[in-house]
Image (cartoon, rainbow, N blue to C red; front, side, top):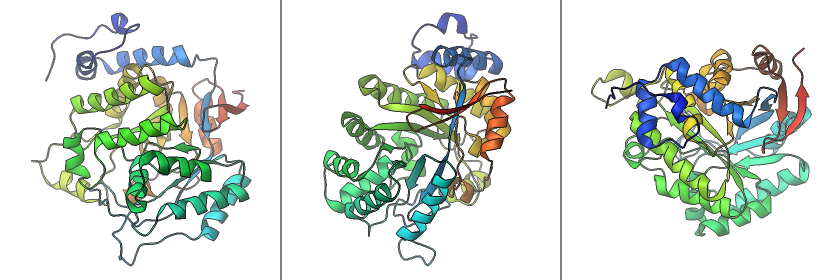
Length: 370
């Protein structure tokens, strides 16, 4: 669908966008005008006098055993494959110790759908980590992992989440959302939970007072309208509880996975592989459409630090994590390692102060731009 009129962003600034207005913006707006629009919305929540934030974190994968078999994944392996592992506590301990020694505050723990691991495994792991590192924030699992734990341990959602909270879970990342439209999910991850179930797990977490993030992986089999449908479902749930601390979007990485090979080899597959410009357009649109989400991360992990820096002019207010370790995106062919100093310098080059934050976006330390 190509609309004929150029959107008037001035008239849209102080109103909630409809889906039709959002698709009009996506298809017809000038990229720089859309970026300026998103930046105006960002300034309502985060004026230029406030620092651009980042968090010192580490992504530890406790296992790469998975029965989800997502077609975009180059990281996980089916049970029984000789390349599978379950990391010992000693390995996880040493990685966490290194994170804490570097001033890190957030441990992102994620893995596959391992049928050998019931809820007792996670309870034991979380409790041990909280004893050894009481100040660390456990930003762990994902709605699909929570659902898998419920199935393996035969628990209802709220009971499972309560037990995980009691063991030390502080926050749930928004992984596994991909696109919250079942037509797309059936094409790229048919064995993973459907859209309603992802939202149901997040809603249960929000009801229990647990904060989470929302994500979107785009640039594969979805249409622009389906990207907006995804944003709309996030916006609806956020209206109910305000439980999402941030929205994080990134582009599909096509190397080393079946979906990427298919999209590369076949012209018959519906595909909307994203460029950096499309990433910026989609980020800006999400900032404008998701008027009830305060924080938007720049995806330097998939886009590189320079585009990550440009994203700060397209609605983002946060540079995400330093990612002392990252395995999933890098397995799909994209690796953009950086350091605390590089993130700080990238922020300073935009003329803004930088600040280390915690998982809930509270500023820990400001690093002035001198």
